[in-house]
Image 1 (cartoon, rainbow, N blue to C red):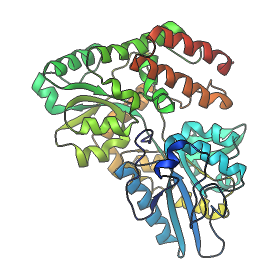
Image 2: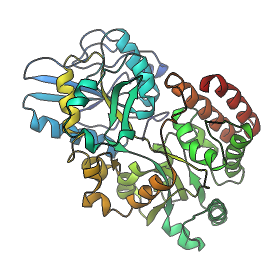
Image 3: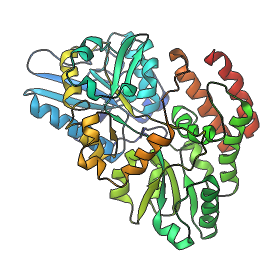
Amino acid sequence: MDINGNDARPTPRRRTRLALTSLAAASGLLLAACSGGTSADGAGSQGSGSGDSATLTVWHYFSDDNQVKLMDEFADKFEAQHDGATVDNVFVPYDQLNSKLVAAAGAKTGPDVVVFNGAEAATLALGGALAPLDDYWADFADADQVSESVVHTIDGTTYAVQGYVNLLGLWYNADILAEIGVEPPTTMTELEDAMAAAKAAGYAGITLSGLPQSQGEWQAYPWITSEGFTYEDPQADALAAGLGRVRSWVENGWLSQEAVTWDQTVPFQQFAAGKTAFAANGNWQMGTAASDADFEYGVVPLPLSGTGGVYLGGEGQGIGAFSKNPDLAWEYLTATYLDAEGQLLPAEIVGSLPSRADAGQDASVTGNALLEPFAQSITRFGANYPAAVIPPASVADVQLTVGQAWSAAIGGQKSPEQAAQDAVAALGPLLD
């Protein structure tokens, strides 16, 4: 879930390029990225060629160094096994990916492979941007190794599968905690007491993303459900309690109000700089922590109540609806994201948890002390992403509604009570 909102800067890599990324392209025009020098509005071929020599285009939204490295490693792995094949990784900013995919599909073009926010499978499938995978999945010999919770089926048709699982935990700066004399928190009271002590010692309390879209909803979910909010029975009082708690962190100086402009990459960079006690962020940040953090750090489960939930998310992988070589695209997926050996690469490079049972038992996963707290969170707080009660056609609107409420409360544009009332009123018809 390391996605690029306001900080749309691609990391230079030999196979990773930016689709539509002159400054003028940031205007949000519905243009489709291209390969081989074709125009960005969908004119010309986007997909792979035919025959032994083929180029597969893979659209993704990663800008973090380690996640870009993973894309390159997957490309290397596939190309080594398929003589003459080339993988062209194409960066598209997170907040533009869905619209560009749907626009490209409307022009009967688009990428061969799509790597996207798994919770938005319904949006892309209903928008005509993903090809059905039923026949491929039925013939996949290792399908029984993959958890059903990461297979995305909409109206009886399978459109995507996740090669790994991501979720949120509470990262902590062990050096700061030692200085202020506190242990890693296990309750909300302990967390807030620790943030107050960190602030008194001259440090920031916590970083997180407050963007007014699906990333915001993803980050909001643990805190609002810990106060009793559910999509099964959305109550404004419970939502306001969750929003109000985090707004109080801003008012106490523990959380920067700039969080409303941060995607999930930026707040972890802030944490890795060493001046913040905590970060509500994901297992996928392990590589960044190892390379950038010049201090002792650790992870514990988010200190939630018994009603709290943590989304089991991660990127979905599918085949573009108008791929010119869908068979080769499927071979790419089974050689990388869905391969037992391939699933160890996200665990090693990024810190993502394998979705295959056999890969999950590898010593490189079970012996990783940083992954253990996330595994505990799966057992204690794991929640389907998106919530099963949300109709597929409403997923994007529900995420946007709650993400906007989250951002408005953190930023002070609305009181937590008003943001909650407005959100619950909008959720009614979406959840009906």
